[in-house]
Image (cartoon, rainbow, N blue to C red):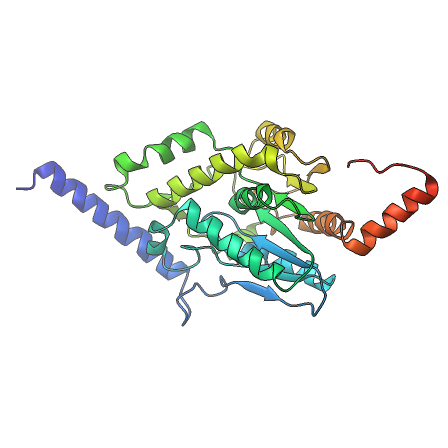
Length: 308
């Protein structure tokens, strides 16, 4: 027979489920294909022979956060693909059936698909997508360029503790609201209002995020691709000292860290144009024709190449 405590817990759980799912359903209506309107994958083709870029979005978010960057790179001649990761951009209940392995496998399949068609393919990851990008790069020694935008490579102790203890409380609390506190993840109020992020995390998603971060952090020394990293000093998720520690552990001989305006989701935030120009420059400088030209110039001048 159920005790009063168990009945109370079941009631509270059901109430939270209704609240989270009703809120998301009202704010994030689904299209005919079952994905949130505007949250689907982005695919922009620049034609045969074009260089390609795989864009990976953050946890609980969608490719919508990468739309401006995708359009910017496409206008510069890149084929761009930004997939919707498993459990994201759909009914929020699907966020309860996710894993770090599934996210990585999906990203790797997208990378392989681009490589099957394009000779030159780079990877750009935002937040959790940056951590997934690190894991891809750690096993792809021939990756020509990697860009990590506000990469989530270290969890704050409180968040880590909540994630690791999820098996203890997850059956009672099926959804946890994502709190920005007094500092939002998007400083620009108009872009913040356009966000298609769930605003909730499930116990499974928290565990998957924690595993993704831990495995990416461990993989940092194995990354050899030329790596560009962008962070904001006002990031509400990643402290500047944590960003610097992660950057120092990157194994790439050629790497650069820049500070850009905005909060955490800098791809839609104030000053995003500065970020886009920096990403574009990093990628274009590593295209085969640019690299050959730069090498010939150094040979003529007799000057060796140097790491950025």
